[in-house]
Image (cartoon, rainbow, N blue to C red; front, side):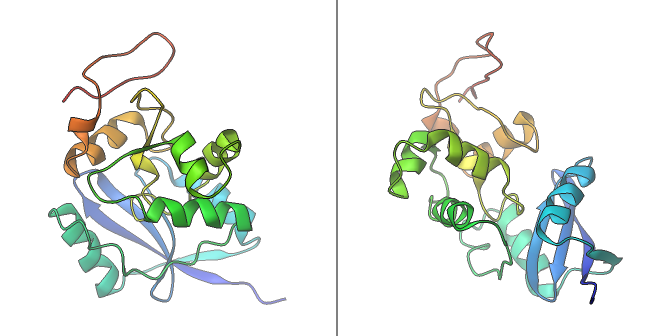
Length: 186
């Protein structure tokens, strides 16, 4: 049995040192500081027995991330991804990549965009299982009333990313509603 080895690299960002997992130049995972256990758990589900070897991110990946954090909305679109996942998850992740920079979409809107309007919960689960944060922009999905709901990297990071992308103006200016949801003040 051949054991697959991926490169584990870090990228210094305004959100801390991001964890990158790569198969050559293809991104397999991207997660936040402090979320390495989650990243490893998701990797183990997709690539049982895989190993990580410390290394550097390919220049093209590092350059694309640097351009994204500098404000280039199209910088991440050309990155090669190796996502795995079920056909349903892949359809959700592809739909996420089609949400334009500076825009948001509700879970219901995302479900409708893949032709499965009744699958809102399943879309939410697929969104939460996204292995490549930021590049597959699950942070652009918000609650039906503009609430910042469930983000595996934390709501503060989700709010930062939406502000960075200029999407804050789309969200209502209210605070925590007591139900565990927070909205972003413009």
